[in-house]
Image (tube, rainbow, N blue to C red; front, side, top):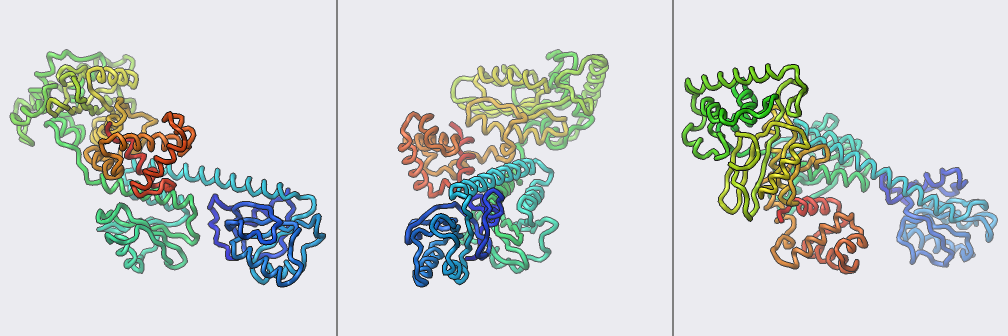
Length: 576
């Protein structure tokens, strides 16, 4: 039999591993490759093949073994036809030695034959196969978890696409490349010339073409998978190595492909443009003029909040009224224009602000550093807040307890949106602040603390986190346990994305809500029927029926990890 079992496939274990166990004392009588063993079964039937699925180590003592050469030939042929991986022959109690005719037929038909000695019971062989399978499964789970962690960290790299490709190549012990619409990116070990695959790449990126394929390129087997679904052409990811991909390898490849798809969807998005000061901070970073002003407007002085009566004067003098105060930015943009040159009064105001900031910092010298002070550079750390108001009654933005003048808000009476820059005052204080905002009818999301130069990333971080906050109905603060995938989502496109993925489950009907809730609970319980049924307060057969209906309605196979991941992303980020 041909040896076709992938070496990292947790569903089988190489025959050599089982034979090599010292506690079994097995001996190879007929060597015919090293096939994978899916399980060990005992059978003394005349024709056990009809009850086998393939991949088994068949254990027999030859109780009903045919006595004629023709009978032995037919017996071995039926096992080969059923896909049996190997035969383990026990030399007791029926036969003292393995019959010569069986050995000859196994040689002729390429079926591995192993001798099981008298002291070794068949149950010990079956248990050993089970132990080896479990060890390989746990090993592959560890490897899969490590690869997923590395891929999750890769998305925060300055070059996330390049980093994802490098992690993919390292995890699969091969090379990786991304053939995009305009360019080809590859890891250092990838071949310089991939032109021989151009025809196959063309088929994959066509609207009606396949989504995945494999081909030979030199000594490597190359695996190709589209990034996105045509006609949204985000390219094709390629992975090459001499050995075939196993189940764990394919799961890593699917995850990396999904991440590259998300990165392609969000790479060209730009943050919305607020008032004049906030625009400058987010796009240009901190400057000598904006740094002290930002500290002043967010009341970040180390001696406590500044006198709020001084804020309008400082903001007006510095030209910061584009975001000046909680009243919004529309009027300020009309007065100050966009990108106009600073007038004399603006320069004077900025100088005054720097002077006040300098005095404030000096007066605080020698005191204990507060939670809002950055430890590395000595400056103040900030967080970006994004919040939305529900359909019910909510407090107007100008009356919210935010303690900042760097605030921008939009929206009509039914639903409002705001974002603001806050001085960092520690996680506990900000969690209390988010809870207080919720009492005012606002659901908020706060970024991690950053220096002013990092506000652009913090702004996108808070916007993405607000997607989860709106879906769950609870405020969120970016911390060490936050899902790093949240930073990849385009907040403006989440609704369209969830509707596209969920299809009929996104409909506003009682049936769709029941099915989507069932799917959410089932995925939360990792596909456990009993626990999902207990959470839903229904019978497990009802859960099975609903999941089967979901698979039929969406045209998906929920045994596919990629499909489950996509649906989980959509369900966990869908607005209620």
